Image 1 (cartoon, rainbow, N blue to C red):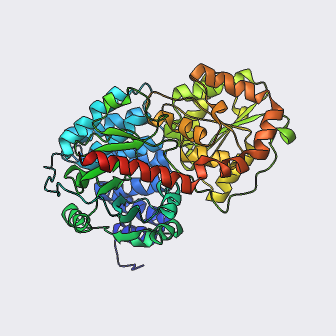
Image 2 (image 1 turned 120 degrees about the vertical axis):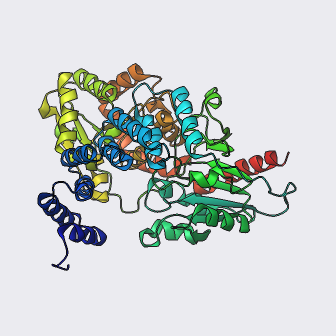
Length: 516
C-alpha cells in the first residue's frame, strides 16, 4: 500500500484486494478528515454493509442521502441496506424515491420491483402492475423480428443460457445436473456467461464441460446479441430475471426467436418480448397466467434439479433426543421472515411447551437485525432464552446447523427454495404452505418433487397445526431424520436424467408452437 496515497485512495485499493476491514479503516479516516466528502462516506457505508454492520451502514448512507438529496444511486444503496436488514417495506419506499429522482436509473427500478416480492400481502396482481411499469421504463427497445420464418426441425435445438450465476449459487446448483444430462442429439446448449472469469468455480467448470461456454462479461448488449444471433440460437433462456447483474434489456430487444425466463427469478418479468416462464403446476396454478405477459410453459414435475453438496456433514440423530425439547429452525434470509411469519413462529412455540427456535443467516449477525427479530417474538410472548439468533459461518458449518434443528419452518410471503433443498438433505423436515405468489410456492414445489407432500399444509393455520403435530410425534421426526437424505437422493428432485428428459420434451413443444 502506497503511504503517500490519501485514505480514500487507500480504501479503494484495499477493496480491490478484498480486505474490507482495512478498507473500512481507511474510509473512516477519510470521512474523519473530510466529513463533507460524500464519496468517501458512500464507500464507507457500503463497506460496512459488506461486513454486515448494517446499523452503521444505514447511518452513514442516510448521511450521504442528506448530503446528496438528488443522487438516485445513494437512495438505491440505502434501499439495499434496508432490505438486507429485513425491512423490505422501507426499502421499496426508498427505491421509489430513487426512481422519482432519476426514472432512467435501472438499478433502482430493478431493486424496487424485486423487493416487492417480499412484502406482506403481496399479490400476483400487484406484481404484474409493477413489472409492467418496469418494462415501460426500461424495456422500450424495439424487438428484432427478422429471424427466419422457416426454421429447421431436423437438427438439435440450439439453446442458449444467459446468466451471471452459473457457479456455486442456487441457479448453478439447481441446473448443473440438467446440463450434465442433456442429450446433445436433441439439444445443443450454449452458455453466455456474464460472470467475471475469476469468479468461475467448480460448478462453472462442470457446466462448461457439458456445454459451449462463451464469456460475455463486460460486453454491451449489442455485441452479446450479435454473438447469440451468430450462434443461431433457437431458444434463449434468461436465468436471472430482476436480480443483480441481469440482462433483461438484452431480452427486451429479442436476441432469439423464442425467449424463456427460468430458475433465476420468481414469476413474470413484465417484458413483452419474453415468450414464456418455465415453471410447474405448484408454482403456477390455474389462473396465474392472467397476471403474466408471458405464457406459462409447464414442466411435468419439478422446476429445478438439486445437486447435493458433496461436503455436507453427516446427518446426526434428531437433537430432541439429547436436548429433551424440540428445536424449530429457519435459516432463510431475514428479508423473507415477515412479521406474519414471526407471529406464526411465536404461536407454534407457544403451543409446544419448552420448544426452542434457532434462526441463522449471515446478516443476522448484525445487532439491529437480531434485535428486530427478538423484539417481534417478544411482543408475542416468546422469552429471549427460547430464541437463538446467529450470523455468518462457512458453508459446511452452516449446513451443520440443521443437526441442531428438529423441524425447519418455511417463510412467507417469500418461501424457501434452495434452503428447503438443503434442509431436506440434512434430514430436517420442512413444514410449509403455498403462498399467494410464485415466490411463495417454491417450498411446496420442492417438497412435492422430494416426495414430501405430507409436510405441505393448505394455509397458514394448517401450517401452524402441522408444525405442532409433528413436534409432538417424536417417532416420526426420528424416522424422517433417518431416511430423508437417502429418500431425497432417490427422488425426482435429484434425478438429472429424468429432469433433462422432461426439460427437452417441454422445449420441443415450445419450439413446435413457435413454428405455427
